[in-house]
Length: 188
Image 1: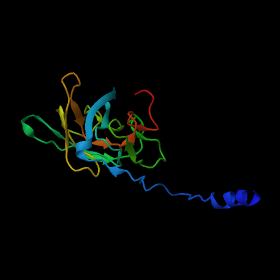
Image 2: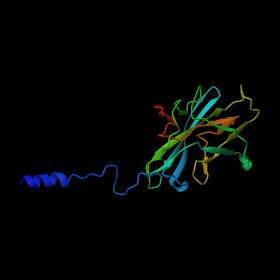
Image 3: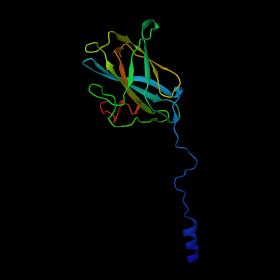
Image 4: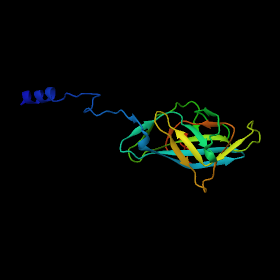
């Protein structure tokens, strides 16, 4: 009996640490067909404008996005005005999107069929105190997401208003959750 217990103790407790059954934890970059872009909300104050957007995964698999979107605008008669853009991870003053200072740009994971991430754009919607001589006003925004081939066209409804920028805009990185901020802003 003692021999059998010793054999069980020695022979059956072999454990492979750090290995799985072959499944991979690698998450691929999202593809254009997996995603939907939509306008979420805005915050406006004294000529400052913060717009928030959601990116939803409608594909079956978990995927990820990381980095800064690029946007352009289309005015009536298909003209594309020049709107200078800068990328900024941090926010300050009236700019309420982006990351808390000191945080690294995150890789935002979107669960299959329902994952949501967000980003925000900050700018000014009036010329007062702004070097811009002209402002744009349009309902159509074209968006490119990092490492995703293809362009998303977003058309605001009349109830949602217009994209109205005077001068340059500040793009914030894609972050987990729906608030356009990291850590998340509980107001959204």
